[in-house]
Image (cartoon, rainbow, N blue to C red; front, side):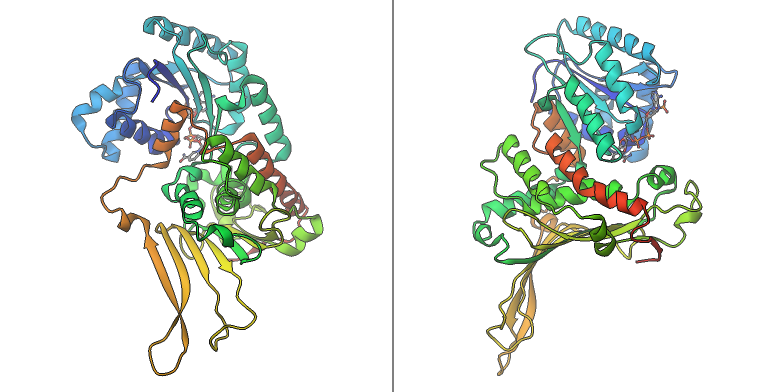
Amino acid sequence: MTKRPTTLIVFGITGDLVKTKLLWALFNLFLQGKLPKKDFLVLGLSRRDWDDNDLRAHLEKIMIEEGFPRKSLWNDFLAIFSYFKADFTCPSSFVDLAKRVRKIDRQASSCTNKLYYLAVSPHFYQTILVGLKENNLVVTCNNSSWTRIALEKPFGQDLPTAKKLDQLLGSLFAENQVYRIDHYLAKENLRNILALRFDNTFLTPIWNKQFIDKVEVRLWEKEKVADGRTAFYDGLGALRDVGQNHLLQFLALLTMDQPQDSSSGAIRKTRAKALKNLAILSPGQVEKKTVRAQYDGYRNQLGVKKNSSTETYFKISTSFSDGNLAGVPLILEAGKAMKKNLVEAKIFFKQPSKCFHQSSSCQNVLVYRVKPKETIFLTLLVKKPGLVDRLSEAKMSFDYRANFNGEKFASDYEKLLLDILIGDQTLFVSTDEVMAQWRFVEPIIKAWRQGKPKITVKNI
Ligand SMILES: NC(=O)c1ccc[n+]([C@@H]2O[C@H](COP(=O)([O-])OP(=O)(O)OC[C@H]3O[C@@H](n4cnc5c(N)ncnc54)[C@H](OP(=O)(O)O)[C@@H]3O)[C@@H](O)[C@H]2O)c1
């Protein structure tokens, strides 16, 4: 843990992300003594005409509503928060912010570490980045302290906007200062993938095109698009909402080579390589190999355009063009208003042309499930009891939570915040990864915009 005085500057302190994720994460880290002990300050920004006490009262109200524990410690926890009124569209706000930040440093008699956390709509990113730059807030005030920036997804709207944003970020910060968040990477069960794959050595030699027949990754959500999110979602669609990021990161972890070592640099580089190995579809292939649909009733939701052609469901059939899995078919699928919540990957292993026992199928499948329950299944072929040798499928299963009953599972944002504070970038998306993700998605979005293939309205 960083011992130096640290200032966490949260753009968007009154927003939903803070309410549902960041406040919990900070509180849990506080309870575990993982925040810097001395001079740790959270400076929260929004447009409201508030002072420190108003912000603390607002946060306390959330803590009551959400049933935070250990009430006797709340006052100490809330004391780390301070408020700053700002309008991100107004350049003078950044001039004032710079003064406030320097005052914090003076009061701490130190050049505090600075973490700028952009918990705001991405359309503010550019303005905020420029505001920070113009007011000299991106440079560290001495060699022993750091300045870092954390950004939420979506990172860009398409390849050109992502490139532009990345260029701007790259001109202000070194890559080791930038923390692009895809909270899926911090899920306990996703962090477990590398352990499964590279610490169980019997799997390593069979994780290639010689043995793997097909890979499927799906992210089904039972819920429709939430009413408060319709306008945002309608401009985005399922592919950019969860495909370009969560689904591809899940896939990268499942298909990447073994990194040279367990360092952050080696892991990020290898994830990026896996993403670059994805076959890019031509416009003709997009028409033939992708399906996009909209659930019935979507266009009637408030905030959705009546003639919207935004997909709430997609299925993409592609493959890997290079690497250990070159040529292996790959199915990527995600959707809203699906039959059930299901986030999982299936690795189908090749079967021989003729099974040893009489059976039409002797395929092993590894199911890596994230939702509804973190589980891993391996389907095996076993002999049915009885006088005659007949095969039956059996499931070997591992339930992550049941197995570690009583152990605390770290929440995504608790892990992410801690890692930013200690400077570990393993669970953050690198510039190479984000660009590879957009390069894969871009031709699909383009063809879809031209109506190829046509979108269908149906419940999947
Ligand atoms: N919510 C989630 O669960 C979630 C999950 C994953 C990622 N994210 C990402 O996190 C980011 C934030 O999402 P959110 O749901 O928290 O958004 P939100 O609820 O709309 O909050 C936006 C925040 O920005 C502030 N704000 C808006 N315009 C401003 C301006 N001109 N000047 C100063 N402050 C301004 C708002 O403050 P006032 O209106 O009070 O001034 C509010 O604090 C987005 O990038 C989102 O995609 C959110």
